[in-house]
Image 1: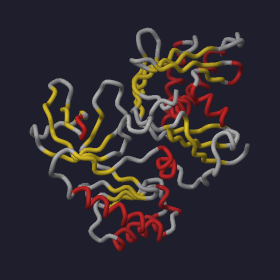
Image 2: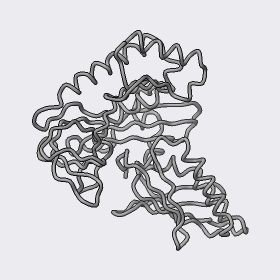
Image 3: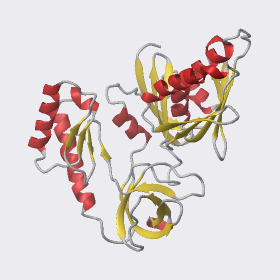
Image 4: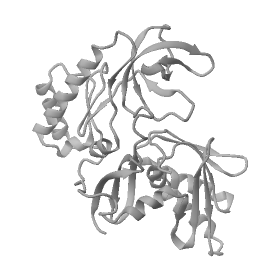
Amino acid sequence: MKGTLVVCDQIDGRKAAALVVDGRLEDLIVDPVPGTMSLPGTIYRASAGRPVKGQGGQFVKLPGGASGFLRQGRAPNPGQPLLVQVTGFAEPGKAVPVSQKLLLKGRYVIVTPGAPGVNVSRRIRDDDRREALTALVTRACPDAKGVILRSSADNANDEDLTSELTELHETASRITDQDAGAPELILEGADAQRVAYLEWPDVPAGSDGFAECGIDDLVDAAKGPYVDLPGGASAWIEPTRALVAVDVNTGGDTTPAAGLKANIALCRDLPRQLRCRGLGGQIVIDFAPFPKRDRRTLEQVLRAAFKTDTIETALVGWTPLGHFELQRKRERLPTL
């Protein structure tokens, strides 16, 4: 299968969207069971609760008796109404992570209410195009602030960009006018298929489901722990309650460089594997045996692999037992 394909379907009654490039699953987004949890990007009017000493934040009251956890330096007064946005999925039994920094995302434009100025993505390097886009924003919305033009705006039709900007700016104005009152849902977050539309803007969508497009086996593989690596090597990616464990094996290769080759292959493919499985939080890699002097090489490969990944991931470092730790934002819901 050559080319790029986006396919929308459902997995166990949950909306899902898959991105396939040259026959390989590059990304998979799956929603929670409808009505069970808030989608990232959802905006609520909340009520500030009690600060939590030692945890760098405070609880807030959401509609329906739910609780959110707000991380920030200066805490609002208890009972104060405030607008918050869900930043990720909550672990079972924990409060929903929220932020007061609101962000409205479109295909070409991001609007951040309360932020200053108009900014253009650094990936748009042509100075004339950057000036033209800034002028376009000024003409369309003279009072617009906190506008970020995404890299996809470089090739966008001016009419489509203007229309999206105007819609997002009006939505931002309407939301910020609703900062007083009881806890209430203000704006629902984007579901998996909407996220695919926003994040994969240059890709034509498939009209059929996973099975009809012949990618159901690829999707099923993303639900399992096994990862096939080049040269007969393999890895297992298994989420637990506390962390995600990654184990690398060399297979039948018994050459002196077998461990390093298997580990490099895993490092290069790990961002894709985590995306497709929707995994985040603490991640611990148990590499195949390799010389300690090659640790720097693996760090460089990992850093290069995660540099282009869209989900925030921190490379923490080595443990005394020789494992490598990462901390990844929980932007996705596990597909398992």
